[in-house]
Image 1 (tube, rainbow, N blue to C red):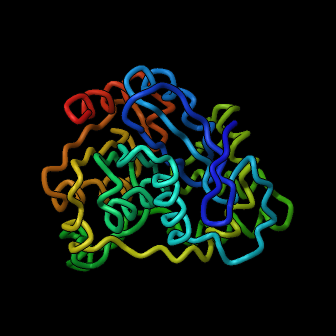
Image 2: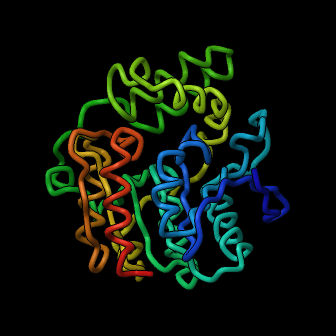
Length: 277
């Protein structure tokens, strides 16, 4: 495992292949290991680099401190890109990592050659809400994600790790998702369970029309065809609001599409990047 010192913090990362760097940013409760199904296939054409964000495995964080924020992770990823010393990168982020990748492309456009967002997490401001929501129709059923994070973190803090993880995972993916989780995914989520304590106060801003309009990098949006409506609404808004954005929905998959059907996911990524170096 390699380490790059960034913003006073050692970021551990995995690497495979050669060529234009392709940086993979993991989501909530995961880490660099999440991208194991992508490392070799994508590494055949690119220098694939998968870091673990601040406080995620292999770190063993106790949940204290005030540096678990979107802003800090954005600054860390931007500095990591600079630290690689290889120029702008292709940047791929999944879920919360997709939100971070989006903000890096927005704030540091000179460091991103192409942007791939796999069901980026977050929320839409009022100007981006679907028409039926803007007109006062009820929100889709299910627990609001912020509430799920808070309740899951409380269980983790009280020692009920699996109970907290089940609550969060099912709020994101759907009923029964925790029981269906592959063991390698569940192990990662247990290793990173206490990061939920930081996520309660991560201060994540909603996406705005101006935010979407600020993205200049060629952008691919990737979704699971059977995913949650909350992710579909974000993908729909980004498809409308990011100039020239392309979109691929992976059949038969949900929020963890890159793990559920890695072959289809990898093909979509490589096809998009083929003309972009």
